[in-house]
Length: 117
Length: 109
Image (cartoon, rainbow over all chains, first blue to last red; front, top):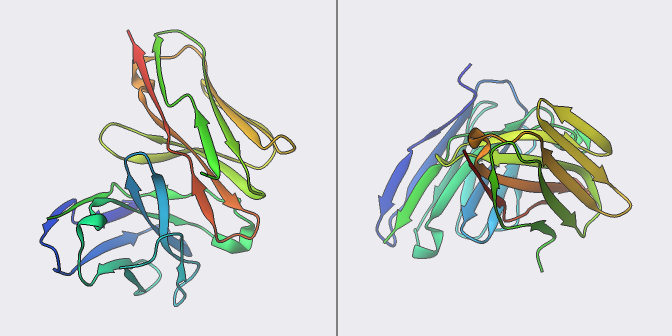
């Protein structure tokens, strides 16, 4: 099993450009998450998908859109990138999500480093 | 104010020392996670707990729900333990996640 995979590993964008970060998991997990990690801020949840076909906003959703394409894949899109979106983006998945009251382990991908100039 | 506070922010220890990292939180939670982030950036989930104590090898995690406090202990620390340790909580309502800013641990041989 590859676990949680993310592409690309690194990306440089100009302000205003768009891009999609891809995430896939092969563990048959129901829930998937997108986080961003900034120095001094810790990890912050951008969007969350409890199951295929559903998405919910997290703490910092502005400027992002997500698509739960199927059970395996959860993509994060930046329609018009801004320098404030320079960050490291982590995708994660867990088995059952909200139905287990939080008592599940999240598995993280390797991260995508995004630089917006 | 951050809902999750960790201390210390940075910690340097000699190999073999006993290490404690603390986490305090201010919200009602359903679970608390301890994560480890290696210098390369990868994040690994170490523990998930909602009460009591868990042990895995040289790592021990405890939580006191009444005091809203958790500790991560590392016994007989080793240079390969050098990493950032992150405390995270999931709110009782289920959809809110809060993360500490991490404790950077360096273990010197």
